[in-house]
Structure formats: structure tokens, C-alpha cells
Image (cartoon, rainbow over all chains, first blue to last red):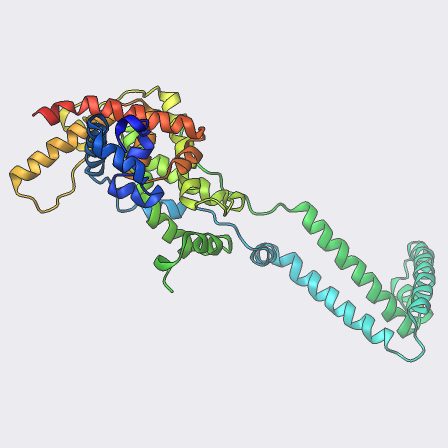
Length: 203
Length: 197
């Protein structure tokens, strides 16, 4: 094959003849034959080799020794959800720990109540709603009496006498659960998460 | 397996789990090539460090958006490219001197901020020759248009493929080939006196 038989190779085809770029595309045998016969392409390849060697010989430039530390001091890596949850709890432990303990105690009490013989969820719900309603209105009435006659110990005693221990425990458990849930919700709504550090940008 | 032996993709996965050591390994792995390209683009070591740092910080900050089907290094270089181009546009540093930082006010400052050659154990006269040659080449590279310069550096110094360069510079493949071809031609002209000397 002679140069007249073939077009001149493109710069990329010539580049593939340089050893360091050979692995990338692999030189075409036809291109190699062409260059062997074509003075113009041989000169072009030689110039390309010179430029490549000159650029490869450029002095190495390194960042300062503290570069990695400086980067790492500014880097904020993604945080998995469980770590975010732990951090959230740690930042609000004064609310979360008491609320969680109260919720756990209430849950245990509720479990105990539901495992009593003859106690069914529907029955407990019905009973609780009735009792809460009764407690509320009794409370309103008793508070009115308290205000009227200022007899606080007697009022509390009357309320205690009017309620059976099991009923009171059930009502307390449900009230505690509700309180804990509302407390957690309020804590979540009223407090913001840890502030995200802003990335400094160069103007 | 040590962090140095892990692939880029493995290190990225560890970083996504919050592993600091994996992040440090990635920084160590790519700080030199990234800094090197940015340094030759802005011609100011301190600024180059700031831009390279910023590129790493942004890369880690947006790590969840990284598409593992691309090379991590290409993605990092792309962020570095965008930061550098933004900076060059703002400062209009189209052509800058090889003889140190553009804002250097004294000869000492220029000397201090000029790129230096690594000692490879040559004799003093060889070192001087190499230093002079290095300066000539640096000067020739510095005189290229920023886009040509970056494409040429990524191709010949960093050994990136055309596809990767197109990805990093956000340019069509044909444009990248043209830039590299024209950049080489300009370099050949700039360096022609070395051939005749």
C-alpha cells in the first residue's frame, strides 16, 4: 500500500502510534504502513512525539504538605440515617429521654392491663373514653367546688374514691402515651436540627 | 485491604457511609493531578490550592449525586474545571505570565511563586538545562488559550481519553479533538526554536 492509495491519517490516528497512547485505541496497521511511506505524515508524527515528550517532561507541581488536612477539615461526608438519628437524640436528650421513659412505662402498663383476664381492646377503649369523660367533668365540678370552698385535700380524696385503681391505671397509661407523643412532636417542631456548615466559596 | 489498594468506586461507597479515612485516601490519590492542572490554568499556587480544595469539598458535599458509571476522577476534574473556568472568567486571566503569580509585585515574589522543577539527581548544568527547558515548555503552555491549555494538559500530562476530556470540559468530542489539535500546533510553533537550537 502506498500513500497515494490512502488518505492521510487524522491526528488521533497518528497519536495512536505513540507508545503511551497505543493501549487506548491501538494503531491501525494501514495507518502504520501509510506513515512508513509518507514523509509528510512521518514529520507530523515526529512533531507530535516532540510535543508529547515536552509536555510529559513538565515539572511536577505538588500542593503544600497540609493540603489533605485542610481539605478534610472542610469536608462534610454524607451521614447514614442511624447516625443522624443518634445525633438527633443526643442533641435533644433532655426531652427525648424523659419522654421516651414515660412512653416506655406507659406501654408496659398498657400491656399489663391488656393481658388481664376479661380485658378486651374494645372494652378498654370504651371504658377509657367513658372514664376520661367522667374524670374530666368530675374534675371540672370538683375544681369548681375547690375554688368555691378551698378544700383541696378533700377534693383529691373524693376524686380518688370515685375511681377504681385499674381504671385509673388504664386512663393514666393512655394519657401518658398521648402526652409523650405530643411532647415528642412539639420537641421536633420547636427545635431545629444542627446547622449545616456552609462551604466557603471564593469569589 | 488498605485504603490505598481500594478502587475509587469502593472508596466512594465507604465515603457515602461516612468513612473519613476513605475520603482522605481519595484526596491523597487525586490532589496532585487536580492541583497540577488547576495550577497550570491559574498560574498562582495559593489560588490553585484554594480552588482544588473547593473542588474536593464540593465533590464530597455532592457525593450522593455522583453517578458511579463515570470515573470519580472525571467527576472531580469536572468540578475543578467549572471552578477554574468561573474564576478565569471573573478575573479575565486569559493570558498570564509563567514567571510567577500574576499579582506578584517583586522579583523575589515572582521567583517564589514560579513553578519549580523536581530534582531528579542531575548535575547542576543538567539541572539548569532541565529547568530552562521546563520554563520554556511551561511558558509555551501558559501562552495557549485556557481551553486549549486545559485540553492539552488533560490529554498529555494526565493521560485522559478524549471522551473523559469532553466529559470534564462539558464540550462535544469533536470540539475537544479540535482544541487538542490546535493546541499542539501552537505548542509546536512556540517550541520550534528548541528544535532548531
